[in-house]
Image (cartoon, rainbow, N blue to C red; front, top):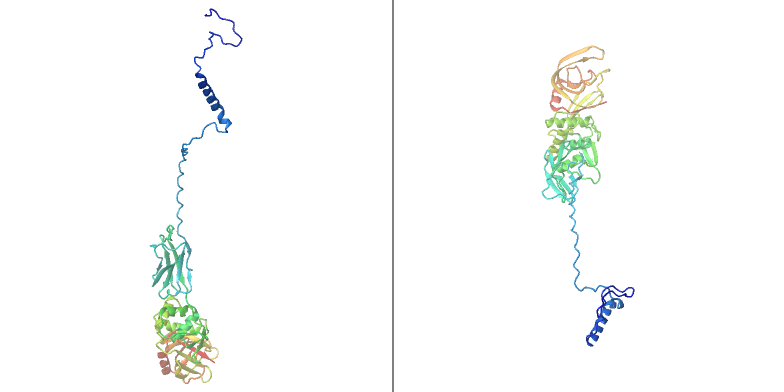
Amino acid sequence: MGVERDQQLPCGAPRGRLLERPRRSSKRLGPVLLLGSLAAIFAAFAPSAFGLGETPTSTQPTPPAPSPSAPAPPPPAPVRPTRLTGLPSEVVHDPTAALTIRLSGPPAPGSPWPTLSPRVAGTWISAADTEVFRPASTLEPCATYQLTVWANTTAVGQAPLGKRRRITLRVQCPSILALQQSLARLGYLGARFYPSRGVKVKYGHQTRRLAARLLYDPPHGRLKSYPASAPPLQSGRLDATTRGGLTVFQEDHGIPPSETPEGRTWVSLLAALTLNHRNPQPYTWVTVSESIPETLELHRGTHVVVSSPTNTGVRGAETPQGVFPIYSRFVSTTMVGTNPDGTKYNDPGVPWVNYFNGGDAVHGFPRASYGSPQSNGCVELPISTAATVFRMLAIGDIVYITG
């Protein structure tokens, strides 16, 4: 039967219409309901009971996580420029030796060769990290050269040099010892070279390179006057005998005489040594003995070709002893000066004059006799003898005066 008003219900019960308890409709529902309840219980407790995770593991492959974008490659390192790590010395001591330039790496194909100015016959080669110039014979003695390394010179794997480099090379002049040995070999000194034991010296025609080596590396040995009466020689010193031989050589080769050898003389000496162009005349000099009777002798090679009595200076105007190269010559000249007593003299037309020491000269002069001191310092000869002597002498020949 229905309920007309609300009934008082136990505390906690919901308010509203009271439902009747449903009846079971069939006994068949019992097993089904039991199985459902067991399945619900199993689903609720099975994960924790069997140690399984709350979320079943998926058998699907995990997609890769998106990778961050790759960083940009670093900029390439700058290529370093080629550097010069070695250069020749600015003073060339041996002009036959190679000139070497060292780079910071092997020269790259197509890299330009350095150049020498003035041009020199020879060959450039590369070896490892060097460029080497080998002269065909030699650089010129006492010369100056410009060595240029170009801006686009490049080593393998490097940038070009970038800036032209220019070096001044100064070739050293040979030594005085080399000058003396050369003049003696060519017959311009009265001396012979005696090499030290084991030293071999080639004479005659030779290559220009070998001749240059003789100039810059003179062989060890001794120069000795030959013949024994020849003017004395001081080895390694530019003494009067050497200056005389140098002057004769210069005169023979059209070079103005100088007190010291210079570049043009060395070049001519190098050519003469190469071709063995010897003095066309025998070595010539004059000896004057002041022992009574005073005597003048003219020597050519090993022979005395003129011998004559002569006059030297009186007391107060003595003729000095020593070795003197002839420096000036006149067929005829006027001589003026002062006598030992203070009087003046003026002698025009003095013939066959060879000046060797200031105002002192070998010349002709008329005297009543010869063989004793009578002059004002000169060496006087009979005029006919003086003419013969004059024709056989030259600028640079030695007047050797002894007591």
